[in-house]
Image 1: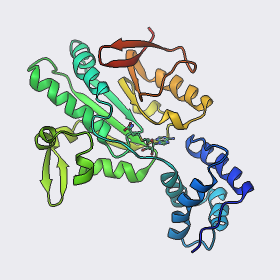
Image 2: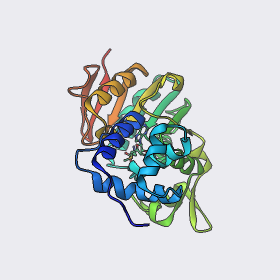
Image 3: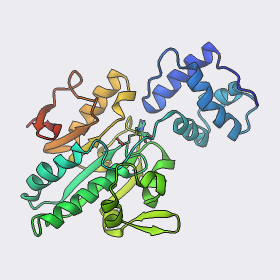
Length: 276
Ligand SMILES: C[S@@+](CC[C@H](N)C(=O)[O-])C[C@H]1O[C@@H](n2cnc3c(N)ncnc32)[C@H](O)[C@@H]1O
């Protein structure tokens, strides 16, 4: 099938559709990107043209098509211990502080993609316990969520190919936390058992997740409009425990969207703490 460029009116319809469905804001001139990403979906669902696919999509009755389109338009880029500093702050500052309370610790990896962030948090917890025996005695639970069922299923599986296992992971950590199963690397059970993964659209209600000590919401807010960022950050503040911590991506900040957080500077980097 030859690729038909997306018509101007269809592009506008699609921009609104995508923003309503998952918060992602497309610029004015991403026609080529949209046509090329949707071409794959159009072919997979055997629609004669992109226009046919679009008219079924916007009717909103085909959940499977909706998921495939969101999958095609989102970036699932991630890696182990991404940017390093959030995990250093977790190990050196946040876990020691929370360990003193002797209460269960709950951490949310919002937009967890294929699970590397949530599992890096779990590995950091194990490393803390190994170098500080007897200090962290309470249970640590890590909840990973993402809008995409495909990436949530991958995360739950906890198996990674050679190419993704090397991204951000030292050979020492790989050998310590994974076992080789055929041509894949499977994460060890003690790392997996602290985690659970579930599908969740950040535009929807989070209250069922419970209250968290720490939220990692990294490299996803950048795709959203200012109103969405404000709404998400306010609602995240609502499910943090008193004094809870929000960790954002390197280019993200709550400044200008909410006054519920104060910036905390550690030698390794910056996090945001819920105001009392
Ligand atoms: C670039 S990845 C970031 C993964 C990880 N947090 C990291 O920093 O490495 C962005 C993730 O956000 C997810 N996402 C996009 N829109 C979302 C939404 N409305 N609700 C939940 N997840 C969303 C995508 O499916 C993708 O897996």
